[in-house]
Amino acid sequence: MTSYQALPGGGVTSALGFTAGAVNADVKGVGAAKLDVGALRSAVPAVAAGVFTTNKVSAAPVRYSRRQLAGGEAQAVVFNSGNANACTGEQGMRDAERMAEMAAEALGVPVPLVQVASTGVIGVPLPMDRITAGIGKLTLSRDGGHQAAEAIMTTDTFAKEIAVSLPIHGRTVTVGGMAKGSGMIHPNMATMLGFLTTDAALEAEYAAHLLRRVTDSTFNMLSVDGDTSTNDTLLLLANGEAGAPLLRGGDAESDAFAAALHHVAQELTIMLARDGEGATKVIEVRARGAESIEDARRVAMAVVQSPLVKTAVYGADPNWGRIACAAGYSGAALDQDRLDVAMAGTPLLRQGTPLPFDRAVVVAAIKDTARVPIEVNLNLGRYEATSWGCDLTEGYVDINGRYTT
Image 1 (cartoon, rainbow, N blue to C red):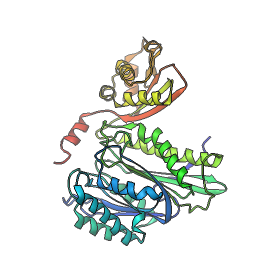
Image 2 (cartoon, rainbow, N blue to C red):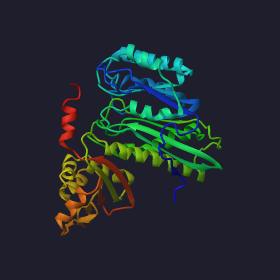
Image 3 (tube, rainbow, N blue to C red):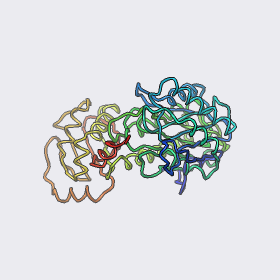
């Protein structure tokens, strides 16, 4: 039984001590009426942990924030959409540093405690005149989290926000978050820009360990298109403002908090899958019966990444052969004579033998649901994992074929 409760309309500033805001700085210089520069601030320095892109071509803000986060503490994040500040050379690093300096001055926090995140087009220098002007106009508030969630959107069609609360040692603790991501989403890290906040007090080493663990089973199990971004940034800030005792892990209260954080991350992951560029369906793949957790994840990710599976879901085609094929090349230990496959709740393959099924019923089941479940059972062990993705449609090609034009 879960101990956390959803907070209607909650988001990244639901936890005590967090404020945010955003402005239209016209980062792309096209006159669009879009929020595109924003900031998130904690009232006090917070324990901070981060997970960043594994792409060897990483953006300047990623390199800057990795370096600043070495101390395990942060108080603010400044961010922009419309320009990734990636592959921009030494000037890009200077611009990331300048964003941190400007935000520190505007928000009244030390420069070393400011994280920087950017998203948008690669290879274009930041328009620092517009960025600087935008940072100077920021006004942060408890209600500003919704604006902040909008400001990090690029090809996203909706803002992704969530918050939950739970009791910790008699105190009410809140976990909130926001994320952006629609395309160029693939592990590892997985996705996007994502900011998680809590007014719980976390020991620094535990915060870093917990974020990695949660990421591995949520954001790192997401794939929209197989492209790992240059700018992926996931941050966790814990400021302790709820007044609950410090959590270090290894006890029931820490476990309850971990479950709440996992729920927030998983719900954001599913939102990201739902908003995949051109997507009409979420694909949820549960791989069971694996010899190891690594094998379970390999199978789940191979299936959800497969262009043939993605297009089959789009066409409401119960083509279980594509699912079995992806499991087979995943690299996991597998015996095809023990393999089970089900799609949209209907068993299609059992112990390697095709099962009779009513095609019209399965087609209708796929068409009638927004989240298409696929289950693969290897029947070899006790480990399982779930991945999330989306179908592949003409809309994805249309969006990305004209991304810079």
